[in-house]
Image 1 (cartoon, one colour):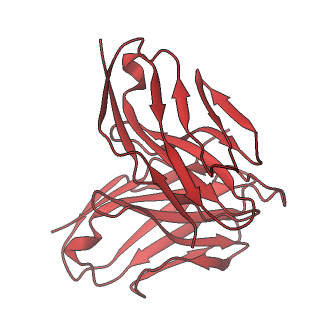
Image 2 (cartoon, rainbow over the protein chains, first blue to last red):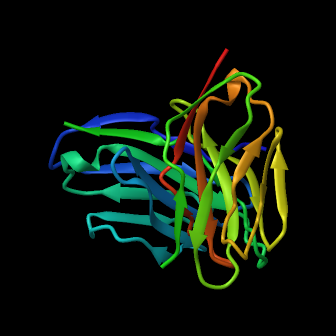
Length: 115
Length: 112
């Protein structure tokens, strides 16, 4: 069974540009979430989608947005990039069990550098 | 809100030494608790989890017990190897929720 797949793995963008990152969850998983990892702030939750609806959102500015498609694949977009957006962006997926301890599986991440 | 506090690193050990990384949490209700590991240049891998009080999660020689009375989930391994060198994250998710709150991470280096 393939894991969570993220593309691209590495990218460099210029301040002011926008970027779109893609994530394919594990087959059968309908919950997809995104996290930002930086040396200063650690791992921070961005948002979570389930059945194409955003269910949960972290404390990030509106420049950060996402969406989920009917096949559960997800994209996140960052507009008007700032230097501080340089980070590892991690996508994660989970199977909706309705019980406690839903295991959340992570992809390898997309390394974004803003110059 | 929910939060996780784990011991500051870095931690440097010799091979076959005992490893313990402390983790405490603040949460309402009955969260699930996790340990994730991150190797250099990679994403997060689930190491182990526990979903209710007194549960013990274990994997690859690592263990952690969900202690509700002390709100703790300390990670232990009896004999570490060089290959255990990584960053370890303690995390929690509220009951039936998909938002993880992470600790700051503890860098562990094991020397041969």
